[in-house]
Length: 133
Picture 1 (cartoon, rainbow, N blue to C red):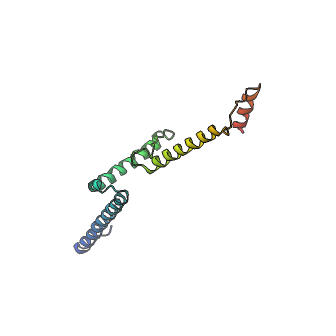
Picture 2: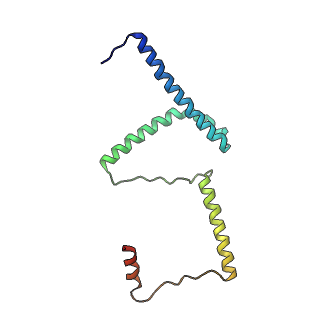
Picture 3: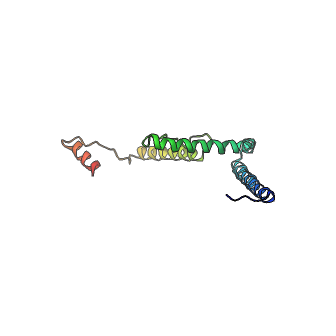
């Protein structure tokens, strides 16, 4: 193993320390920038907990690795985009409202096609064979 003099150890410790500090500041700046763009700067204090977040991410990664080895087919899923401030939820709601208006207009105009289920003998078998193919 390489053993340097005390000056090189101090220099390496300074480089490693600066790397950690620069990484933390960069991450905090990007978080602050994201909060600024969303108009949520009042919650910027939470950025002080970034090292705790990193620790929890590391623990989650180790847990996932353990779960992959112990139960490879078990999968814990997370629903994303459900927060009140979620842009995805807002877009989905807006799209559904527009779709409802469009369908209502078609229905009022009598242009909405009706879907009649095929109840003829053998229809269920044809559906199953289409799904299997």
